[in-house]
Image 1: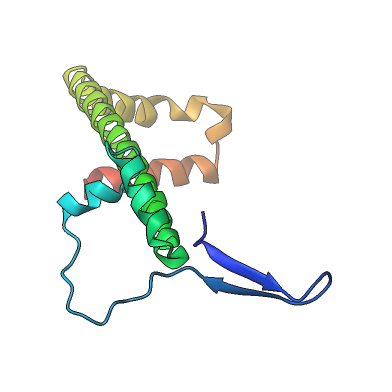
Image 2: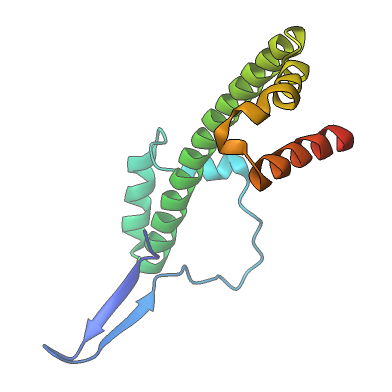
Length: 147
């Protein structure tokens, strides 16, 4: 949702003028909105209807637009937070699965078995004949040396 704005025109086919509905600042000293105060503005709060009534009786379209903008982005941020939490949990589950599988592969001595098979029997595979086979063997040996 984009920022709420007022749209005005001089008639059909004329240029449309727009003005964002940012809340007008007051000239007196103000304090920052605390997390507790944010709860008053968020949609779905217990007293949302009372806040809506107060904004309508104030009759300030810019203030209403700013509250609407705040609520919209607060809601989106909350949804993203839930998705991030779910993704973190999924990532942790995948890492745990990798760890367990790695442990089983180590117990089976899988890497040594694979390397031994490559060194001894690769010449039997027609796909790895010639240059391609030498490149594959060199890459695997280099990986073993650097590991």
